[in-house]
Each structure stands twice: as C-alpha cells, then as structure tokens.
Length: 330
Image (tube, rainbow, N blue to C red):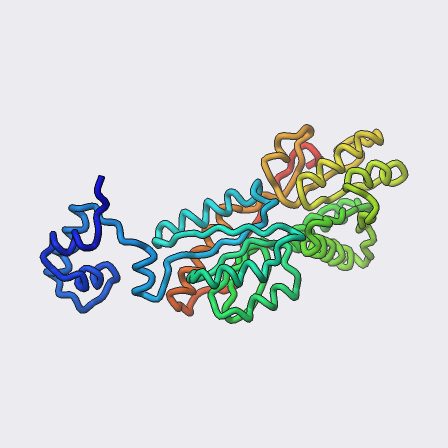
C-alpha cells in the first residue's frame, strides 16, 4: 500500500506544500476555507504527519524522554502506563531509557537524551541523592521527577511522602504501647531508607523517646535474608518494616525459621506494595501507592511546563493508603 505523503495532500487540496505545512503546524495565517479544504484532504487520504519533520518546523520534537531504573519494571509498569496514556492525549511520543544501578550514570543518560532533541524529560527514580537532585536543576530543559521531592525553577516533581507514611505507622504502634520497632536498611535505595528512618525518629521524638531500631545490613552479608535469619535468633520486635517486597519476604522467612509467629508475636509491613505482597502467604501488609496516577500526573505537569503555564503546582504530593493484610493484626 502506497504511503500517503504531504505532496499527495497538497495535490488533493489544490494548495502548495507550504500551505499544508502551515495547517499541520497550526499556523493562524491560513484562511478558514483553505484550512478546511486541507483538513478534508488529510482525512480523506488518511495522512499521518511525520512527527520528526513536524517538530523541526516547530522547533519541537513532540517527544518526551522517560528514564526508569532497569531493575524496577515490576513496580514501574503502571507508572509507565499512566504516563503514556496522558502523552497520547496531548500527542506526545515517549522515548524510554533505562538506568542500571552501578553501571549507568544518570547524568550521562540525561545528557544523551537532551542531545536527541527531546522537549522534556521525566525521570522515575526514588534513589536520587541530594547531589543528583541539585545537578538536575542545572539543565535548561523541563524535567519532572517521580518519586523524589525536588524544588527548582525548571524541575517539577510528583511523589508520595514515604517519611510521613512511616511516621503515621510508627505513631499508631507507639500509641498501642508497641515500642520495639525495627526498620531494615535497603542497600539498593539509601534515599528511601533515610526517609523511613526519619519518619520513625519523628514519631518517637513526638512521644519523648529515641528511635534506635534501624538495622544496617553489614557489608559482608550477601542478602537481607542471610543477615536476618541469624539476627532474629537473639532479637525480637513488635514490628519490622522493609522497603521492598523482597525485603518483607526475607523478614517473613527469617521469622519462620526462628519460630516467630506472624502476626501474633511480630508484625511485618512493606512500604512499597506490589502484586507479590498479596501472592505470598501470609499476605504482607503494605502501603498502596497510586503508581498509575504518578505517571499520569507527571505527564500532565510536563505538558503545562511545555506550554509555559505558570498557575500550577510544581511540587505535587499524592496520597497513599495503608493496606492491612495477614502480617499485621489490624
């Protein structure tokens, strides 16, 4: 089947190529009857404007770069879906890039994306260090961060307040008289670990107490499970909190090996909810985070930045919902 070109549209409408180009790119210098004739020809022939050529005319590529960690596709699937759905509404294309921890430098990825002439960049990365967040503000391109709270002129963010979630959870247990609470270090996400510990510390301070339940995984321990299976032989807690599903499962398995009944003798909570928390037995209580909305809202914010709008929130906090399952008593 022959591919319809802009030349075919011009011939069908009886106008010049320049006139077709002006109609496609939304120019207001084309008279209405001519515009209607060109639009009718486009519809009749089924012409699809080339996004790259259209972008060159507008000095825009209608393409947004999306950066996600390679190891988090299980969790980021819904984020990507939400972002793509909104991108379609506003006729933007998504160029996906992945970052591999310890191998790919996010700064290098951003610079490569910018060289490819995208209009903006959306980054899902809840592991960004303070230095990396500050460096992103130096780029002269609209950037939206998913998962980190960042404030800068050219950077907007959409996030869920993990610190507040852990604070509220810890307060609930303290008010029930359960003070022996542990937070497991997530060696793959130091930023999230820091927020979790801060939330617990704030709750303990509110009660006039000091939080000392942070469990740092020793460098020689190959996994969280290897460390916990030994640690729980001599230590007991009212509540143990892990950041990822694999960590929560490590706590659960280590507890079983040490004859600790869950949830009767110890409760377990996972911060980031995934489908695996509901598949394991007992099912793991966790925080339901609106993954789809994180993606959808971030893309909507990006469109507002590209349209140079000013009357919108640059820092957007989405809500979470604690989902009790079988590893907590209520």
